[in-house]
Image (tube, rainbow, N blue to C red; front, side, top):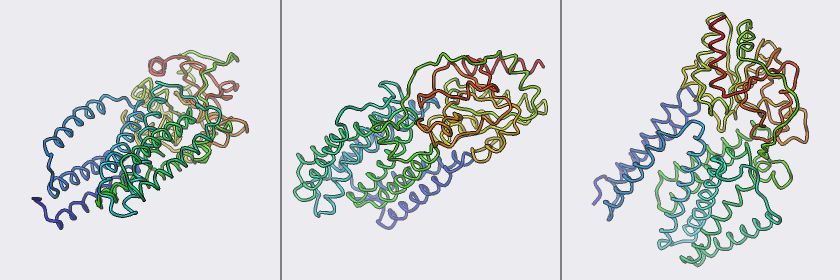
Length: 457
């Protein structure tokens, strides 16, 4: 016997849905993101309580046991994960969500009572399987457990097309003559399609595919809501699917490319390749002391952070350097590219963690006109987002991507570990410009030396 009446259950579901909507609103800004995340978690808790108090369960100990085990695994993993590994964590969580939706639909096969419910089950199984296996491959690529470059083989588009035709045929049989064998075949096809879907994607495109797969998972959750007759799953899944789609399009636009070009670019040479080739062209390098002098006598400095800053965990040292420069009357702002790092907002969160004021973080459109008046631009771990090839080299895989106009500055200082190319796998012509100076080494160590020298001026 359920404790809550249907009316009370519906009311709690409404509260949970409102929390999810407010959470998305909060996540739209770094200033309110933490609060939005807490509101979303509260909504999930309300939904969980509503389900437990309104449904009849026959295996409560098993359900509670799985929740305890899952929490025991997820909590420490989430707390220990580094900011640089956040996209990998998102990929895994997303894959688990898609796989869970597919399994739920598989278990509901015996309750198919109409073509519409059969269609919902077929869709959930197929797309959930694609999301699960595709997310696993994106995790492996970002974690460098497999090559990050695009992986293709002769006839791959034909194989992909045949698999899709087979999946559609299997889905049709699920709708007309549902059976466990057919659903199993559909599940297997979905897993293979997910792998082949992500293999041709490489380099900086992988995070965009994570966002797209997140949208897929949202759609499978919404379809699960139809299968189970649960309005809250339908609402939550639709929100995730819509937000994931919007984010995917925004990330693709920030790179100046189409979603189809990102997914299928490897077949026509338009995907980022993730090369590790090192150039032997001469560059102008400097010492930390020389960079400190350059910064100390500037009037306006723009800092461009990138993935290298995150890898070195140098955000606190960078914030301290900015404070030291401001104490000398030097204006310091941070120029943030929409896809700096490996996910939108990556740099904002990283610098907020170091207590850099939000008003110092300026988006690309706001900061680009200011580079012409900057005395020094300090690029810390960024590469592709400041590469002039995006504007000048039509054959480049990043051609057309909006970039930060760092080349307009009077002096540019690059903090790099080595001459290894960025995630797109191409040389950055800005490194060889006469106004550019390079300081090689770990970003945190380099910034510490610069900070010491600046304080001594």
